[in-house]
Image 1 (cartoon, rainbow, N blue to C red):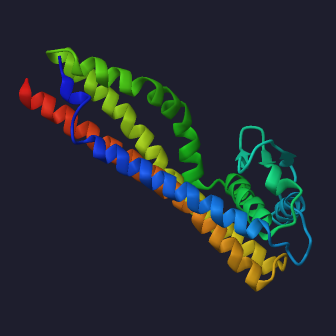
Image 2 (image 1 turned 90 degrees about the vertical axis):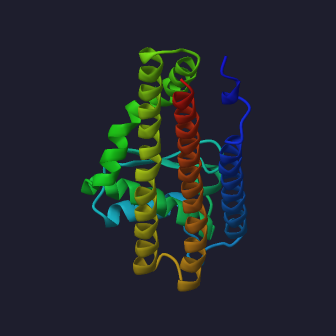
Image 3 (image 1 turned 30 degrees about the vertical axis):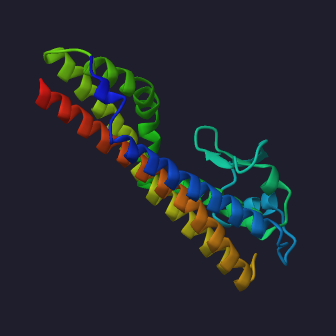
Length: 235
């Protein structure tokens, strides 16, 4: 039996990924909370800001809706719905307007056919399937011998690599949406210059959560490669 899979130094790679993710999550929550207390000079709500940004970009078929939860905001290209969470939808804070503008950035990406967004969308079904089956395949392969063992491990790692690719392609998608948000809020006059500075900090902190998530996935992939290569050398 291969006990090294459960007790080995490579768990430190997973721990590093967890720490990075926790730090990024703490940072975005703290930054959002700070700027959620600062009311925008315009008094515009997150919903109103989103609707105005969509109209400015010639988008009239995207519905702005409310969704329960905290920072559960997202744009769904399947039904062209832009969902804003409790602290954003009716809030007049700088943070709320920034988050709403960011989600509008995704709607504009979809409207313009932004390639990285399309690629990410195409990967979703594979990632959902791969994330569910990759680890079971690898674990089964590690407890087997012969060609079937290598086959199962290779398929599992390949599926995991697709998940890593999904996280990597998410980075330019999110960064681009934030840049669009900052640009439109500054050029439209919806926020003052100092308020736009606050939005930049909120969105920069949010971007770091995606960086941390991608880093954690890469570290997990590295661990998988170390474990499976060690197993193959012992066969």
